[in-house]
Amino acid sequence: MSAVGVVAAAGSGSRLGADRPKALVELAGRPLVAWAVETLLAGGVDEVVVTVPAAERAAFAAALPGRVQLVEGGATRTASVRAGLAAAGPGADVVLVHDAARPLTPPDVVARVLAALAAGAPAVVPVLPVVDTTVVVDDGGLVADAVPRARLRRVQTPQGFDRATLLAAYAGLPEGVELTDDAAVVRAAGVPVATVDGDERAAKVTVPHDLHLAGLQVAR
Ligand code: CTP
Ligand code: MG
Image (cartoon, rainbow, N blue to C red; front, top):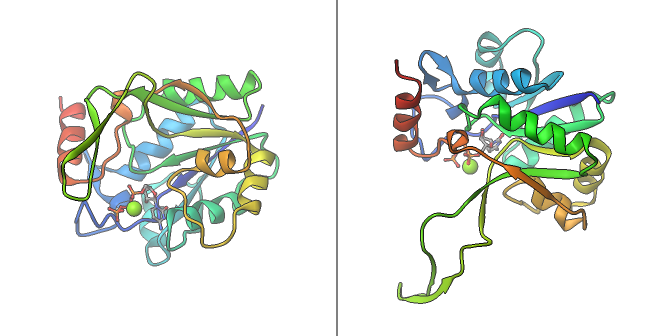
């Protein structure tokens, strides 16, 4: 089974508010995107495509191994993944789509996703339980309902797919429809999505506090 990784790294990182695109922000001296690419390769992915902001191609090239293919991303994550998929190795059997914003994802998570694909799942996502009481509020901010959390899960990346299945699902998604992750795209096409255990260390860097926590994880 041959696997290609697509790393979504073309976002600006507006909530992080750094002086550069989020994927180029450094964690222990290395850009987040370099951590994310290394995780995919260490976990068993054969080749990697990274979607980058058009104006920053040179900075990404300097930050990544020469074997990594760079493609221009789009205005939304969905558009960026579309661009990455179009460039991702036609020889690959499976595709793993990963966020540059999850720099400390352990390679074990990648390996679990690949194992589920090898076992025949057409789509697979890493998940974690929800540990907080979770409620629905009304327009006035009052608690309207509590959500039983036993069956709720938080979804991480990398998300893995049979390549042909993911390409067909994106091809069938109308332009302009934005979904927050790739599993939602295949589910919209009626494909069952399997789950494997995620990892708290695969947390997404969204706001400055997340980067602070990631820094503590790698501090020695
Ligand atoms: N992403 C992308 N192309 C976009 C927007 C996002 O490739 N047009 C990528 C980001 O680079 C990130 C991942 O999708 O690795 C998850 O998105 P998010 O955490 O929302 O990152 P940003 O969109 O960059 O951050 P923000 O929403 O705070 O601006
Ligand atoms: Mg975003």
